[in-house]
Length: 183
Image 1 (tube, helix red, strand yellow):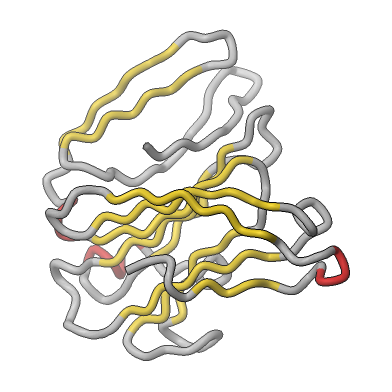
Image 2 (cartoon, rainbow, N blue to C red):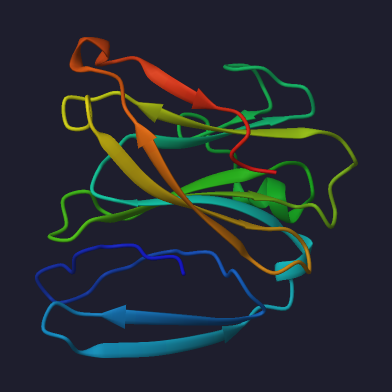
């Protein structure tokens, strides 16, 4: 159920890194002309990682924030698009990382942020997940929509739709913090 948009270069090529959300991952690429390509991959390590995902159409200013092991905002252990962490940390079980995927400039924009945490190999401890929504000129005073996806270990993917009433335009630059969106 995860959708991202992108564009190809002048040769018709595009390189996109996306996470696997199931052990038998299926990726479908649809081009503007309607042609599709299907690619599959077997990823046996999927149950070793938890993933928290927010996806939306057009730019709405959503960000996933992970506060690992008691961290607070802007200190080590605060993983977000401004301090993304590293895939190698997740592979070694040391911490999580964020991937921001999609192009807001594409004709039909689908944006995604994915937080991945190595629950199968990391030391036990609390990871608090929050979602922020930045108030912008494009979204102030109206409802914005997103979808929340979450996968933990062997559990099936859970999906929830989110509609958020944004503050009026005098609040541009502020942000809303949603603390109970993710488990």
